Every structure is written in structure tokens, then in C-alpha cells.
Amino acid sequence: MAVPGKCLLVTGPPGFYTSEVRRGSERVGFQVVTLDGRTAPLASTISSPESFRWPNVGKYKVNVASFESLALPELQVKEDTDLFIIDEVGKMELYSSSFFPAVLKVLESNIPLLASIPIPKFGRDIPGVARLKNHPGATIFTLSPSNRDAVKEEIYLQLVDLLSKQ
Image (cartoon, rainbow, N blue to C red; front, top):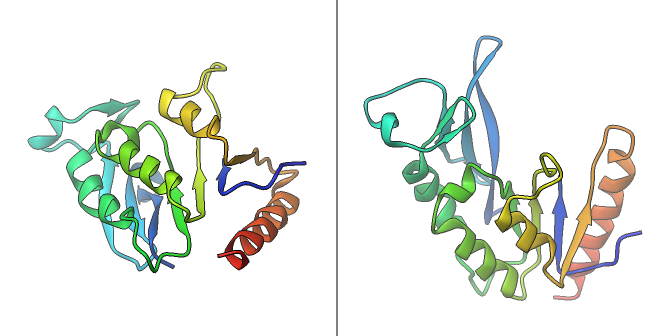
């Protein structure tokens, strides 16, 4: 059983999530989507003149400037914020040199954070992800097809508890 914490890490504004961009049945990229519906490209397999300078994650070119323009304003700690949602803190997002410090600011605030992180590849975490997992207030949930409904309920109950204490 997980111990309740202020930060829930799982594999309304403010916050964002990422979604696939498809061309027919083929995934050609990812976009970042704010919780109020604004979108910006995150990564793409489709080349452009400027994408040759962008970092790679597998077959994807990561558009750091586009990601930062939408995601970073969502991570501003404000007095009227009750909850931050970040999907995800992963390799593509961490190419932004400003993203991880913004996540740490959120984590160090008294505002609950629900964030998704990737499962370690080859048994090794991405360094920024490892730092989040080791944060004293973090609760880690590992999701699988067989447990996701039960874990979803546990996450919901912990969020309700955290938000009722504010």
C-alpha cells in the first residue's frame, strides 16, 4: 500500500498532458495539450528546415521551444492553484532546460501535484525522474492493465484527501 504524500506520480488548469498526433493509422508525433484545450507540437517524425537542429528521442524530433511556450506558463505557482497535473515528466519534456526547474518549484510548493513518469528502461530511470521519485513527499503508483482500475480509485481517494486539507 502506498503511503499518502503531497506528490502523486503515476505511470482543470493548471497543467498539461501529451497526446499522439496521427496521420491515418501511423503515429507521426506528439502534442502538448493544456487542460483548457490549447495545443502545441512536442515532437514529430516529419522533417522541417528548423527540425534538423532539434534533439532526437528515437525517431522523433523534439520541438523544445514549442513545448516551452505552452507548458512552462502552466507550471507557474499561483496562490489560487489547488492542483497541478503534468503528463508527463519524460525524456522529451526534459530536453527543456527550464522544464525540470519549473517542476521542482511546483513540487516544493504546498500545491498537490499529479504527474506521470515513464517506467525505467533497462532498469534505469532518467535522472530527473529518479530525483522526483526520491522526493520525500512522492507516492509512486505503477500501473498495469490488471491493476489500473483499483489504482485509479486509490489515486482519486488520495487526491480528494490532499485537496480537502488545503
